[in-house]
Image (tube, one colour):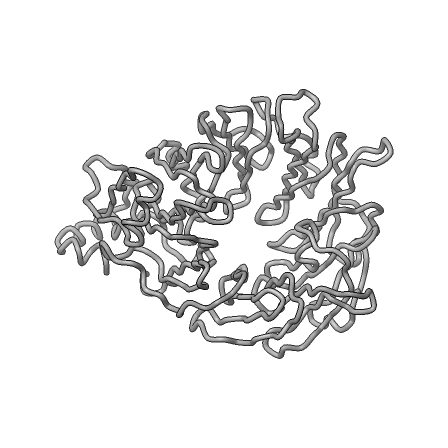
Length: 489
């Protein structure tokens, strides 16, 4: 099975450019090798399926790489380039360039392989709310954009047709297309002149256009965050008001709403503690979601698709939740202005595995195979103590690397279904753990820099997931080998 699984990879971007590392585990005391020489850029991103990589130089160019060979597929000279994004499978490149006149169309959808401009329009302003301008479903069969008072749809087989049909929604300020599948789209209309804000869901089927599938209205809302589940049957909406009328939060007031496309549920999620909604994430199956909420110490709860609570993950200084791509393990953590506490849970066993710490973390994410959890401290959020930490799925620290300055670190996306179950994957990690060196001061990072800390044996009694007979037999074979061979195949 192992030979059929894709290799993990990590994108690392620093002031001197970006490179790509092979994924862990790494030999003791060594730095990960570079699969690509460091290349100057101002921004980088993967396509959602991990097949292609985009690197841009501000006001100058965009280059698309093939992730399997890291060779250049196509480079685009783009004067005044401000933003760029790849479509989910990397077929299309979307760019935004500065424009001095509405007569100059500055948003372009390119076909990457042929470098052909398929569609163009003028857009005055660029913001997080409207970028990427054109949204795609995961398989790129559906594409749409937000325009004044309407949602516009394209024929992805022929962008040169322009807009092929529209959904009217007066006052629309945000749009989110369901990804897998691209069957529905949600639009947000802010509160205005005494009329409450609303979120409305429409079918993407041309024959059902302008028919509202589900709707939710609410007051005290200026912005929203959308979270579609896998299957596109449920939508979580985090609504936020700029001002908390109770004066208990400087950051305003947030509420969590839930809509289903079959109208089985349209309402607010019943949270058991007052306070803000810090984070929410769907499981990989799309049948459950987890929420971190409430005034500190925050509470973490898992709900099913019917919005019924299934399991409590306790309380603590938490504002982040990360669900393992295989659906089995969960990390709840307190990052940003919180001290970096992490709790690793085995959800299938409803068991707390271990607690760990990753202070000053800005980035945190599971690897696609679900057995590594990476945190990073990056600039410009923090200008000192920039580092990458990688833990295994039980919360044991496996790797640390310090940087003078680190801008970005990302796992290369892969489909979790291409990897085996955790019980079979963990064998090669059973002998690895590192002891983190405590610093005497923030500058001491520079003395150990730039080399990962040493590896030590994992203590007896550490968490082991339940083993099948097949896994136990494999474990017996591993125990007969030299430790270094089993740890670093």
